[in-house]
Length: 335
Image (cartoon, rainbow, N blue to C red; front, side):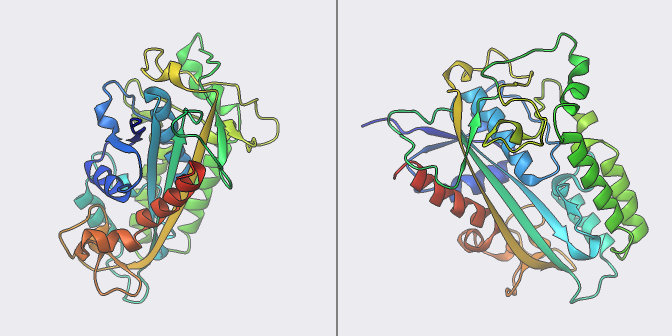
């Protein structure tokens, strides 16, 4: 009997790792955490979308390990806060943010928002990247409505001066332009939304001051930075005039255990899930994590933190995204 192929969960958050593993149960793969791979570099999440950030994490993890990688990224959009905290959900309260501090800030900004006007939406994007789709025991049958990726490191280039990395990548495509548009739109919405407008603007200005993703100046040593993953997608989706997809980023060590195992063309599958609800006035329930204690799904009398694990998975944004991934994986690998 052939050994199961591994799926590496590209996260360092133990709560997210647990949920992703539970949602992957029943598939013919061995699911392992990225923490099992010593030296796996962190990824700079400086995308303007959760899909872009999920692909960044999955691509680096797949390249480093040589195994299938599964990553997700989640946003929380609150109507009365102009869609904030959005992609900043995990670090809404700034450096050193915790679940409790993020929830406390959210509730404080919404303290004067009346019942009936506290609508919110969770969105999760999941990315599945297989750097060895030609593996004989797991032949790819029908990627169908999904995309292929060129291996970004197949023809690696290295800059002589690493300090030129940021401007080099800024000139390749729409990365900086996409971020500038995102930041401008986020600030513009503040003119009409948010009951604590002054407080929200102060928070937003602090988050956006960090540059793309709000993390450019806070990246840990050795972290890998990728421009928009669309540079390597097939068909090529980057803006006109962008470089050919054989261009490769620096930053992935040549000592990466999976680097020589990766094929030139990778399989990429993505899925998105959304959940509508409202923000409660105080945390309720001891389950879940993040904003779960203050998010009540539409039609429910309980918050996500008050639901049993199985109940949450059936309706949650992450559960819905993974359900789409599972269906696509079953079709792609013919199982």
